[in-house]
Length: 100
Image (cartoon, rainbow, N blue to C red):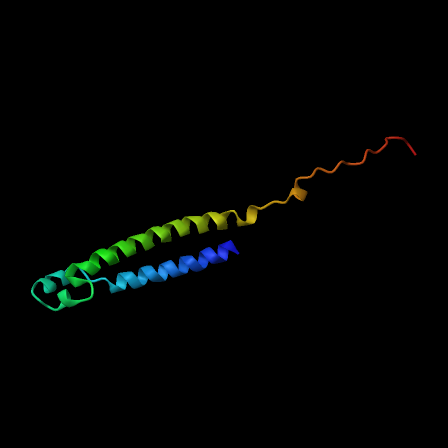
């Protein structure tokens, strides 16, 4: 159950990273904003969205790596679970060495 929840969170974080990277403008787009190309009239201003989007991408990237490590650790130990019944030693019956 926990593995499934973490896998869904992992996929959502991956989709968020893809979306955030696609929304961000390239480094050359700042030159057009300085000459009045209209980017300064946006919701965040000419440089406000860069800091917000960069920080959001960084947070999502850290979450992505942490979830990757946790899921990798969980999946590597998935088949190694042993029960207590496998470690119980059963006494062998003693056979008499008497001739019949």
